[in-house]
Length: 219
Image 1: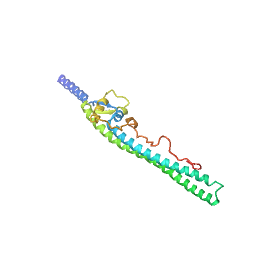
Image 2: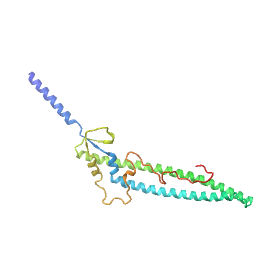
Image 3: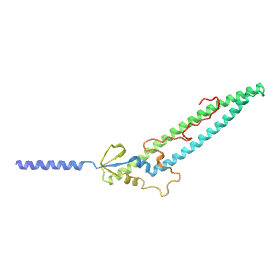
Image 4: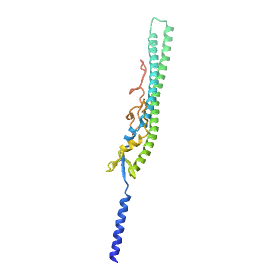
């Protein structure tokens, strides 16, 4: 009786251990940043953003050019208001015109700065929205590929300190780019133009704040 009981307990313990082993999740890792960077749809969407950025840059350059033209007119009018060869009335009129031009320049400077700030914010918001959609598409493909690889859980390797698991990034990269068009977009730019973990910083007119510089005008 005791021997039979011991045998039953041994078999029960062995069965529980076996079930425990079978219940262990099969973990795989994937580099989500790399997938987002290498996804062909990311290239397409970045090309669209690049086009929007270029248009904004051209508009900003136009605004600055017009502002500088007014600034040149202001300087000429300011010099005219100091010309002693003119009559007092002519100098007074030139001084009044110069004051109006200076006010116009100040308004233009404000418009330029606001346009640049709003453009940066808009492009950043657009990228965040697009990035969310792209990540959803990639996650779906990763889940499908993970199942094919026999995984019960797939982790982003960038969020894991250490894991001795099989990495399936390459397999997932092939999966997400399975439907890549035969001819890539002509205007496509490298996906590295926008980091996968942060929104891009748009600077339509370069790294420096555009300005219309005239004497007596504070920046």
